[in-house]
Each structure stands twice: as structure tokens, then as C-alpha cells.
Length: 413
View (tube, rainbow, N blue to C red):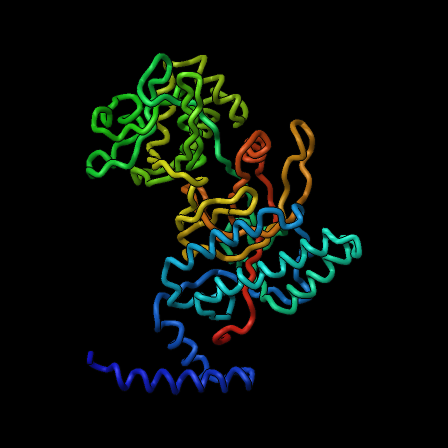
């Protein structure tokens, strides 16, 4: 027996029953409760703090899903499957409340039931859409605690309305070749095993070709800017057309060279090369000025490596992303992925038509090199023309919420 096992178990059991007793009493302002809560939070696995605050019931958002829950069940299923393959030992703190990590899984499973009931109601001719959502909102309020990012002085958008800044990303479709042919001369690389190769900069890889010939080429793209945009999205889908047949493969993020990510659009604007940050402006300038490409790409030394998968691109926790249902947040702040979330933001209707507000339930399943801050979200719009439109044009403010089944282990005062 390892030292301290027997006595430690007895102490933990005593503390467990004391916690139940204190919960029934409502905690009050007991210093002893505070100490026990801290002790419980620091034992039994990792403890994840999030910079959030609990939302009062009368400030809950109007829980309406603009997609009427479409694809939400798939997103939940994928996340729950991930939870069955990883440890859920430990605690997570939202606001002043501390929960066991397994509560994330329980929250998703319970919410899945609400989604099924909500969809059944919406499909029924006996209830109006308003009646269905009124019932759904009552269930959410009764069973879920809601949290939002807690901004402090110095944080972007502190003290302002709509504190969360939203952007979007998607899965681009790129035609590639299996070997260099004609204009297809730009490799898509797998993650090198050698440290010296894995640390090469973008210019060293794409212009000095220091990674070529080491066996890490997956496919060959036809355009360097197209390859850069693939890096921005962190994943994609490629099609190989040969012999009258088309073969499709997903490629997903496998790692980076751990260099700083900087958008070349910022450099091009600051140098006076372009007047706006649109993809079309960047593409046209690079096409018209090939002699400046090395200078421009040198501004972004970061390089993204990929791996081939049979599923849509994977998020940072190895969960396949779901169209319109996955989001990316700053993993330095929201380390444990899989939180049930709700967003209120804006998206384009169609090309050249103004943006419109929307709200929907999503799951925090990803991160990104440019996603920094407590109130910063990248929305995964999926595949297709609209996904591309939304990804390139979403730059709006809104609100972010996290949901957790009630009954925390303890309430931090």
C-alpha cells in the first residue's frame, strides 16, 4: 500500500459527507466550506479555472436556435464519444461554482434529450414554434446554470455591450495532385519528426524548399496563396482528379512550427499594397506582383502541418468538427474542451446583402493561433459556398454563454 492511502480515503469520505451537508444548508459564508471547496477542487485530477461569471436567471438570453437544432445531435454525439475515450477525473470552475469534469458529459447528454423533444415539438402540428421554444426555455432555465466571460479592466471590450468578438472559419475544397505536375508545385506537408525540420519558417519551406525530399509531402497544390488560406483555416478537403475519377480526402491540423502567426493582409495593408483586407484584394496583388511574394509571406513565419483523416477536420481535442455547431476559443483560457455553449452574433444572408443577427447552440471544440482572449470566438461554418462567404466576412460582436447542468460540487464565495 502506498503511504497515506488508507487515512486519505477516510478523510476524503468525511469531507464528501460534510460537503453534502453544507450544500443542503446553502453554504452560507462558512470559511470551513471555502476551505473544503478549495481542497476538493485541487484533488482528484486536474482543476480547470475559467474566467466566467454566473448569469442571473432574469438575464438569461432568449434561447432560440436559428437552425432549429439541426446537426446539434451529431455534434453532441461526437463530443460524447470523445469523452468515453479520455479521463474525466478532475474539476472545472465556472464563475464561483466547481463541477466534476464528468458534468460536461452529463450536460450534453441531458441537453440531447431536450433537443430531441424540441425537434419533435417543432415537427408537430399541434404546437406553434413560439410554444415549442417557450417550453424549451423553461426546461433550460430549470436545469442549467448559465455563465458568460468575466472581463476585467485591460481586457478587450471591457465594460461594453456585446463583449465577444466573432470571426468564422470553414473547410475549403482544394484540387491537388499526388505528385508535382504542371502548376501543382506547392506541397502540403505532414508534421516532420525531426526538430530542425519542424521549426523551419514559412519562407524556408515555401521559398527555400528546405523541407522537400524528406518524405513529408502529402499532396501538391497549385497556388501558394491557396495554401496559405488552408493554413488560416487549419484544415480542409482535397480532391485528386486523375483518369476521369475524383478522390476526396479530409486533411486536418497536425501541428505547427511554433513560430508567430501574423496575417499577411495586415502587412500588405500597412505597406500600402492593398486598401482593404479582403481575400480577393490579397489574391490579386500577389498574382500581379510575384516579385514581392517572399517579402510578404516572410511576415508570417508560422507554418501549419496536416494529416489525412476520413472525417471532417478535427478540433484541438480530436473531435470531428460539425458544420455550424463547433466553435474555437482560446485554449490558454478555456483549456478543457467540450463545453455546451450558446452564441448570439451576426452572419451574412447572401452575397452583397447585409448581415443579420442569429443565435444558436454550439460546442467549444477547437482553438486557433489567432483566437486570443476571454471573449473571442471563431465559428466553424463547415463546407460549401456559404461557409466560405460567412468565414471570410464574419467580423462582428455579440455574446457568448456556457451552460452546465446545475448542482455544483461546491459554490466558491
